[in-house]
Image (tube, rainbow, N blue to C red):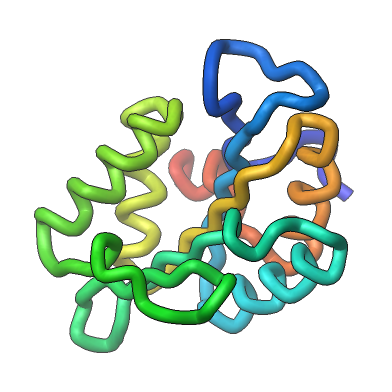
Length: 146
C-alpha cells in the first residue's frame, strides 16, 4: 500500500476539509475497464453513483464522458481536440486542481487513459483513495516526473 494517494483529493470549497465537507477525489487509469472496476467497487462500498464520473478518449481521439449513475454519455463532457483537453483542464482547475496537475490529467486522457472523479465527504476520502489505488490508478506524480 502506498503512503500517499498518488493522485488528487481536493476540498470542493475552501482549502481544508472537515469530516462532513464535500471533496472531489480524482484519479487517472490506464484503461476504461480498470476505471469501471473502481466505479463498481466505489458503489458497492456505498458511494453515491450520481457523484461518480468517468471521462475517457475513444478510438477516434474524441472524449466520451458518463456519469456512472446511468452509464449514459454526458454531452457536456464530450468533445475532441485541443478544445476538449482545455475543457478537462478548465473543469479540474475550477474544482481546485492546480493547472499543471490538471494538464497532466488531460494529457493522460488524450493518450488513452480514463479519468475518474468521485465527490464524497472528507471522512470517506481514504476509502475512495484506497479503492482507486487497488484498482490500478496511475501515480500521476510519478508519471509527470518521467
